[in-house]
Image (tube, rainbow, N blue to C red; front, side, top):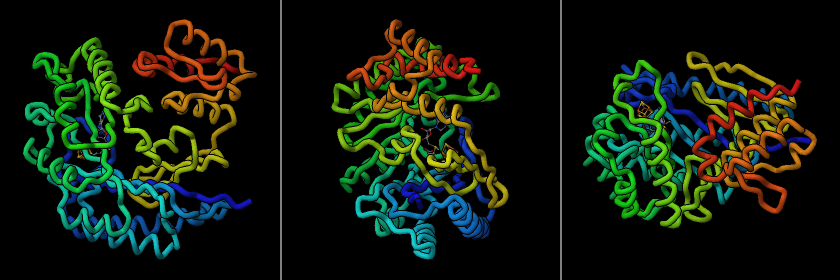
Length: 371
Ligand SMILES: C[S@@+](CC[C@H](N)C(=O)[O-])C[C@H]1O[C@@H](n2cnc3c(N)ncnc32)[C@H](O)[C@@H]1O
Ligand code: SF4
């Protein structure tokens, strides 16, 4: 049976400036034209290699149901990027489904009206804006290259377009506790711009982070998270994944595929793709268009399915673990402690308190000795 690949992630690795908290693969181009050309060569080679990998595994491209361009700062790829990508997809006969969710990440002060329109002309119908905070001081502390006016201009533009778009926010920011950052007030302001979706991440940094000593306490971050979850729920946003909130029907279809452990192809430096039926994961190298391939064992795949499904409100299908006493015992401990609920005795899912403790719950899960 030939299986179809219907989701694709592309990683655009360039930014105008490197924010000091960011751990994603990215660089500031020294000579933009030259490095973009090199990137296009990388993608051409990667696609050729990827087609070979698909053929070897009896996979072929179906009409894409989701396409996501992340980074880095893909909005900097501009009109040249949209033309390049259109040609690339055409040359590999990759078509978009008529309902394809096609997302582009956009940074304030790193886009133009012309480039956004050009991306829309090739099918982009969803945007993810890197807002992080609506407070001028926090934006400065985060070492962003733009200022609050750039952020507000970006929000005005996307509001006026009446498009489907998401905003990224971050919690646990440096100086937020001493300055009493009011993230709920920021989100109340954000709602005036009619986003359909929010991703709200807790800042994670290494201990050489310049503001390490100015990070808030765990108690502060917990309160921020619970307040945000409560506020967004009250305002009609479904808390459908640990860090994600959406109006009904406007959840990220692309990201839902990760949480369902479904196949998502990926190309670009550092991008990671997964072919679910084959339990194959591949990660692209950053310097050359080559990948490292890993085949998951049945047990590793099951563990991953448990971990990913518990992240979202879809929850875990209890049948997956019905013969696994160690998992069942752990899950019932979580239930007794009040971190999860069950639905029709078939699905279990974490509540907000469980989401908050996700890292420690997952440490317990991965520490189970099933040998
Ligand atoms: C891959 S980044 C790219 C987005 C875009 N370049 C930007 O700067 O807004 C996607 C999101 O990850 C989140 N993020 C980035 N670094 C993070 C960190 N160290 N801890 C937690 N979230 C982070 C931010 O909310 C960001 O919008
Ligand atoms: S713009 Fe985004 S991807 Fe680039 S360095 Fe900053 S946080 Fe990272």
